[in-house]
Image 1 (tube, helix red, strand yellow):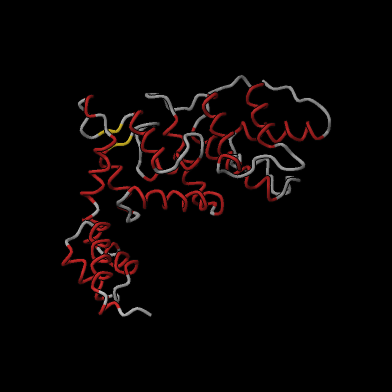
Image 2: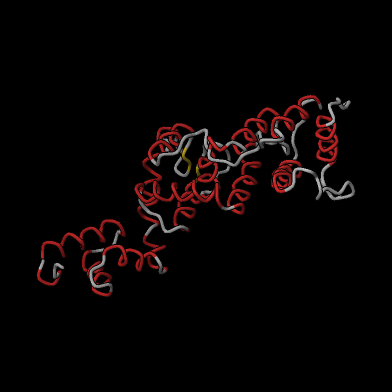
Length: 270
Protein backbone atom coordinates (compact mmCIF):
# COMPACT_ATOMS: atom_id res chain seq x y z
CA UNK A 1 0.00 0.00 0.00
CA UNK A 2 1.34 3.44 -0.87
CA UNK A 3 2.46 5.58 2.09
CA UNK A 4 0.86 8.98 1.50
CA UNK A 5 3.17 10.65 4.01
CA UNK A 6 5.99 10.00 1.52
CA UNK A 7 3.98 10.79 -1.63
CA UNK A 8 3.86 14.56 -1.74
CA UNK A 9 2.41 14.69 -5.24
CA UNK A 10 -0.55 12.50 -4.25
CA UNK A 11 -1.09 14.55 -1.10
CA UNK A 12 -1.18 17.77 -3.12
CA UNK A 13 -3.64 16.21 -5.59
CA UNK A 14 -6.01 15.20 -2.80
CA UNK A 15 -5.68 18.57 -1.08
CA UNK A 16 -6.56 20.34 -4.33
CA UNK A 17 -9.49 17.96 -4.93
CA UNK A 18 -11.01 18.54 -1.49
CA UNK A 19 -10.51 22.30 -1.78
CA UNK A 20 -12.15 22.40 -5.22
CA UNK A 21 -15.21 20.40 -4.21
CA UNK A 22 -15.81 22.12 -0.86
CA UNK A 23 -14.75 25.65 -1.75
CA UNK A 24 -12.40 25.93 1.23
CA UNK A 25 -8.72 26.90 1.18
CA UNK A 26 -6.02 24.28 0.74
CA UNK A 27 -4.76 24.84 4.28
CA UNK A 28 -8.29 24.11 5.57
CA UNK A 29 -8.49 21.05 3.31
CA UNK A 30 -5.29 19.72 4.88
CA UNK A 31 -6.94 19.72 8.34
CA UNK A 32 -9.88 17.64 7.11
CA UNK A 33 -7.60 15.23 5.26
CA UNK A 34 -5.31 14.75 8.23
CA UNK A 35 -8.26 13.92 10.47
CA UNK A 36 -9.32 11.19 8.01
CA UNK A 37 -5.87 9.77 7.19
CA UNK A 38 -6.00 11.53 3.83
CA UNK A 39 -9.14 9.70 2.73
CA UNK A 40 -10.60 12.14 0.21
CA UNK A 41 -14.18 10.89 0.32
CA UNK A 42 -14.31 10.82 4.13
CA UNK A 43 -12.74 14.29 4.34
CA UNK A 44 -15.39 15.72 2.01
CA UNK A 45 -18.18 13.94 3.92
CA UNK A 46 -16.79 15.28 7.21
CA UNK A 47 -16.80 18.82 5.88
CA UNK A 48 -20.34 18.72 4.49
CA UNK A 49 -21.76 17.01 7.57
CA UNK A 50 -21.20 20.17 9.63
CA UNK A 51 -22.81 23.63 9.58
CA UNK A 52 -19.69 25.06 7.97
CA UNK A 53 -20.26 22.77 5.01
CA UNK A 54 -23.83 23.97 4.56
CA UNK A 55 -22.69 27.60 4.67
CA UNK A 56 -19.83 26.94 2.29
CA UNK A 57 -22.23 25.56 -0.31
CA UNK A 58 -24.03 28.89 -0.66
CA UNK A 59 -21.41 30.55 -2.86
CA UNK A 60 -20.96 27.71 -5.38
CA UNK A 61 -24.74 27.16 -5.57
CA UNK A 62 -25.31 30.85 -6.25
CA UNK A 63 -22.68 30.62 -8.97
CA UNK A 64 -24.44 27.65 -10.56
CA UNK A 65 -27.77 29.47 -10.29
CA UNK A 66 -26.31 32.55 -12.00
CA UNK A 67 -25.05 30.46 -14.90
CA UNK A 68 -28.63 29.46 -15.77
CA UNK A 69 -30.65 32.57 -15.00
CA UNK A 70 -31.67 34.82 -17.87
CA UNK A 71 -29.65 37.96 -17.15
CA UNK A 72 -31.06 39.71 -20.22
CA UNK A 73 -34.55 39.59 -18.69
CA UNK A 74 -33.36 41.52 -15.65
CA UNK A 75 -34.36 38.71 -13.27
CA UNK A 76 -31.64 38.41 -10.64
CA UNK A 77 -33.38 35.72 -8.62
CA UNK A 78 -35.19 33.59 -11.18
CA UNK A 79 -34.25 30.89 -13.66
CA UNK A 80 -36.80 30.90 -16.47
CA UNK A 81 -37.95 28.19 -18.84
CA UNK A 82 -34.93 28.23 -21.15
CA UNK A 83 -32.47 28.15 -18.27
CA UNK A 84 -34.44 25.38 -16.58
CA UNK A 85 -34.35 23.25 -19.73
CA UNK A 86 -30.57 23.68 -19.95
CA UNK A 87 -30.16 22.91 -16.24
CA UNK A 88 -32.20 19.70 -16.43
CA UNK A 89 -30.21 18.65 -19.49
CA UNK A 90 -26.90 19.22 -17.69
CA UNK A 91 -27.89 17.14 -14.68
CA UNK A 92 -29.24 14.35 -16.88
CA UNK A 93 -32.98 14.78 -16.33
CA UNK A 94 -35.59 14.40 -19.06
CA UNK A 95 -38.55 16.76 -18.96
CA UNK A 96 -41.03 13.89 -19.31
CA UNK A 97 -39.83 11.86 -16.33
CA UNK A 98 -40.88 12.06 -12.68
CA UNK A 99 -37.36 12.98 -11.59
CA UNK A 100 -38.00 16.39 -13.16
CA UNK A 101 -40.83 16.91 -10.66
CA UNK A 102 -38.65 15.53 -7.86
CA UNK A 103 -35.96 18.15 -8.52
CA UNK A 104 -38.66 20.83 -8.63
CA UNK A 105 -39.95 19.56 -5.27
CA UNK A 106 -36.45 19.65 -3.78
CA UNK A 107 -36.01 23.26 -4.90
CA UNK A 108 -39.62 24.27 -4.13
CA UNK A 109 -40.17 25.62 -7.63
CA UNK A 110 -43.12 28.04 -7.75
CA UNK A 111 -44.27 26.82 -11.16
CA UNK A 112 -43.23 24.49 -13.95
CA UNK A 113 -39.98 25.62 -15.54
CA UNK A 114 -38.99 28.18 -12.91
CA UNK A 115 -36.45 28.15 -10.08
CA UNK A 116 -36.11 30.88 -7.48
CA UNK A 117 -32.67 31.62 -6.07
CA UNK A 118 -33.71 30.91 -2.47
CA UNK A 119 -35.38 27.62 -3.38
CA UNK A 120 -32.50 26.47 -5.57
CA UNK A 121 -29.78 27.23 -3.03
CA UNK A 122 -31.73 25.99 0.00
CA UNK A 123 -32.85 22.81 -1.73
CA UNK A 124 -29.46 21.65 -2.93
CA UNK A 125 -27.81 22.77 0.29
CA UNK A 126 -30.26 20.62 2.29
CA UNK A 127 -28.82 17.51 0.62
CA UNK A 128 -25.21 18.74 0.85
CA UNK A 129 -24.79 19.08 -2.91
CA UNK A 130 -22.81 21.96 -4.35
CA UNK A 131 -21.60 20.93 -7.81
CA UNK A 132 -23.31 19.91 -11.04
CA UNK A 133 -21.50 16.56 -10.90
CA UNK A 134 -22.94 15.83 -7.45
CA UNK A 135 -26.37 16.97 -8.62
CA UNK A 136 -26.21 14.30 -11.31
CA UNK A 137 -25.41 11.71 -8.64
CA UNK A 138 -28.28 12.90 -6.46
CA UNK A 139 -30.65 12.63 -9.43
CA UNK A 140 -29.75 8.95 -9.73
CA UNK A 141 -30.59 8.46 -6.05
CA UNK A 142 -33.93 10.22 -6.58
CA UNK A 143 -34.77 7.92 -9.48
CA UNK A 144 -34.21 4.86 -7.36
CA UNK A 145 -36.08 6.26 -4.35
CA UNK A 146 -39.16 7.25 -6.36
CA UNK A 147 -39.60 3.65 -7.50
CA UNK A 148 -38.66 1.92 -4.25
CA UNK A 149 -39.90 4.23 -1.48
CA UNK A 150 -43.67 4.96 -1.42
CA UNK A 151 -43.11 7.93 0.91
CA UNK A 152 -40.78 9.61 -1.59
CA UNK A 153 -43.17 8.85 -4.45
CA UNK A 154 -46.07 10.34 -2.49
CA UNK A 155 -44.14 13.48 -1.57
CA UNK A 156 -43.20 14.16 -5.19
CA UNK A 157 -46.66 13.20 -6.46
CA UNK A 158 -48.38 15.61 -4.08
CA UNK A 159 -46.01 18.46 -4.94
CA UNK A 160 -47.00 17.99 -8.56
CA UNK A 161 -50.47 19.38 -7.85
CA UNK A 162 -49.52 22.99 -6.95
CA UNK A 163 -46.74 22.88 -9.52
CA UNK A 164 -49.08 21.94 -12.37
CA UNK A 165 -52.04 24.24 -11.68
CA UNK A 166 -52.58 27.18 -13.98
CA UNK A 167 -51.72 30.45 -12.31
CA UNK A 168 -54.59 31.78 -10.19
CA UNK A 169 -56.57 28.50 -10.29
CA UNK A 170 -57.34 26.22 -7.34
CA UNK A 171 -57.83 23.08 -9.40
CA UNK A 172 -55.79 21.31 -12.07
CA UNK A 173 -57.15 21.16 -15.59
CA UNK A 174 -58.17 17.64 -16.56
CA UNK A 175 -55.84 17.45 -19.57
CA UNK A 176 -52.85 18.37 -17.42
CA UNK A 177 -53.87 15.95 -14.67
CA UNK A 178 -54.30 13.14 -17.21
CA UNK A 179 -50.81 13.72 -18.61
CA UNK A 180 -49.31 13.72 -15.12
CA UNK A 181 -51.16 10.52 -14.15
CA UNK A 182 -49.83 8.84 -17.28
CA UNK A 183 -46.33 9.83 -16.19
CA UNK A 184 -46.55 8.93 -12.49
CA UNK A 185 -48.21 5.57 -13.10
CA UNK A 186 -45.86 4.46 -15.84
CA UNK A 187 -42.58 2.65 -15.03
CA UNK A 188 -41.06 3.89 -18.31
CA UNK A 189 -41.35 7.46 -17.01
CA UNK A 190 -39.74 6.54 -13.71
CA UNK A 191 -43.00 5.89 -11.89
CA UNK A 192 -44.92 2.87 -10.67
CA UNK A 193 -47.36 0.69 -12.57
CA UNK A 194 -50.91 1.98 -12.77
CA UNK A 195 -52.40 -1.00 -14.59
CA UNK A 196 -52.12 -4.62 -13.50
CA UNK A 197 -52.40 -7.87 -15.42
CA UNK A 198 -56.04 -8.21 -14.35
CA UNK A 199 -57.29 -4.62 -14.18
CA UNK A 200 -56.22 -1.59 -16.23
CA UNK A 201 -56.78 0.78 -13.31
CA UNK A 202 -55.27 3.86 -14.93
CA UNK A 203 -56.98 3.31 -18.26
CA UNK A 204 -60.33 2.80 -16.53
CA UNK A 205 -59.77 5.91 -14.40
CA UNK A 206 -59.07 8.17 -17.36
CA UNK A 207 -62.00 6.71 -19.32
CA UNK A 208 -64.26 7.29 -16.31
CA UNK A 209 -63.19 10.93 -15.90
CA UNK A 210 -63.52 11.61 -19.62
CA UNK A 211 -67.06 10.25 -19.65
CA UNK A 212 -67.73 12.32 -16.54
CA UNK A 213 -67.03 15.48 -18.54
CA UNK A 214 -63.31 16.07 -18.01
CA UNK A 215 -63.97 18.17 -14.94
CA UNK A 216 -61.06 20.00 -13.25
CA UNK A 217 -59.29 17.93 -10.60
CA UNK A 218 -59.17 19.27 -7.05
CA UNK A 219 -56.41 18.63 -4.53
CA UNK A 220 -58.30 16.00 -2.55
CA UNK A 221 -59.12 13.91 -5.62
CA UNK A 222 -55.54 14.20 -6.87
CA UNK A 223 -54.07 13.01 -3.56
CA UNK A 224 -56.62 10.28 -2.86
CA UNK A 225 -56.28 8.65 -6.27
CA UNK A 226 -52.67 7.76 -5.47
CA UNK A 227 -53.80 6.24 -2.16
CA UNK A 228 -56.54 4.36 -4.00
CA UNK A 229 -54.11 2.88 -6.54
CA UNK A 230 -51.85 1.59 -3.77
CA UNK A 231 -54.79 -0.05 -2.02
CA UNK A 232 -56.20 -1.48 -5.25
CA UNK A 233 -52.89 -3.07 -6.13
CA UNK A 234 -52.70 -4.69 -2.68
CA UNK A 235 -56.17 -6.23 -3.04
CA UNK A 236 -57.85 -6.01 -6.43
CA UNK A 237 -61.00 -7.69 -5.11
CA UNK A 238 -61.97 -4.54 -3.15
CA UNK A 239 -61.89 -6.46 0.12
CA UNK A 240 -60.66 -3.26 1.76
CA UNK A 241 -63.36 -1.06 0.24
CA UNK A 242 -65.88 0.68 2.48
CA UNK A 243 -68.65 2.60 0.74
CA UNK A 244 -69.03 4.71 3.88
CA UNK A 245 -65.32 5.61 3.96
CA UNK A 246 -64.00 9.13 3.54
CA UNK A 247 -63.21 8.81 -0.17
CA UNK A 248 -64.06 11.59 -2.66
CA UNK A 249 -67.40 11.03 -4.40
CA UNK A 250 -65.66 10.56 -7.75
CA UNK A 251 -63.72 7.58 -6.39
CA UNK A 252 -66.90 6.08 -4.92
CA UNK A 253 -68.44 6.26 -8.38
CA UNK A 254 -65.27 4.90 -9.95
CA UNK A 255 -65.47 1.75 -7.83
CA UNK A 256 -68.99 1.17 -9.16
CA UNK A 257 -67.67 1.85 -12.67
CA UNK A 258 -64.95 -0.80 -12.30
CA UNK A 259 -67.37 -3.32 -10.82
CA UNK A 260 -69.73 -2.78 -13.75
CA UNK A 261 -66.83 -3.31 -16.18
CA UNK A 262 -65.99 -6.58 -14.46
CA UNK A 263 -69.62 -7.69 -14.75
CA UNK A 264 -69.66 -6.90 -18.44
CA UNK A 265 -72.12 -4.01 -18.10
CA UNK A 266 -71.88 -0.28 -18.63
CA UNK A 267 -72.60 2.23 -15.91
CA UNK A 268 -74.35 5.50 -16.64
CA UNK A 269 -72.17 8.42 -15.64
CA UNK A 270 -73.55 11.85 -14.92
